[in-house]
Length: 77
Length: 166
Image 1 (cartoon, rainbow over the protein chains, first blue to last red):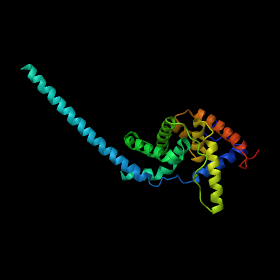
Image 2: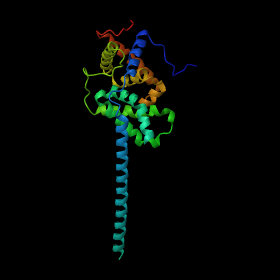
Image 3: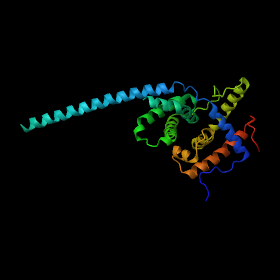
Image 4: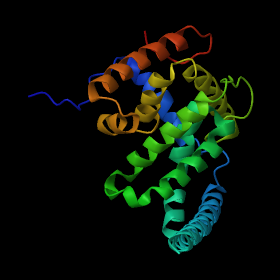
């Protein structure tokens, strides 16, 4: 049974291309040193904003429900 | 949050490199940040710890494709490429080769470029590449074969000495 995931044999030119490309892995990612701090800061900010918006939406929903209920009572009177 | 920051630290290089091959180095960091934030907000959907890198690269790939699709691509012919500093001479040669190789890689279609980058630059398995690109395994292998062939042709059409065997 053949292994579907096995690497087929590469030609010498393909092996050279692979070696050239592997060299790019050694290269450090440009300007990525501040990325973790930036991501963490933005994620915290987005999470806080989401909570505030969610809270606001819940409050508005509760108020709308209350007003609808009051309007219903008045109509029944 | 601290645990997620550690994950970003651990995977930032591969994410930025993969993003850079799709959108260019100028936009790579923004795309990487966007990909990490998308991952952060979907962390509760993620189960398999072993496949975190694959999952993250899938998000990175899709984010980079969206970013690339929203603007006209620019070919960076000049500028500082990422180099691997050793001796000053090695550093110069490495930078020049990386710059030229990056330009040649951009000559490939995005679908071919991404499989080649994930396989030969990042060392992912066929299955991981299939997951990242959401492509059947057979298509990954076929694309990889064609991509290598196209890149060889592009390199051969160049006066720079790539030391390519006949």
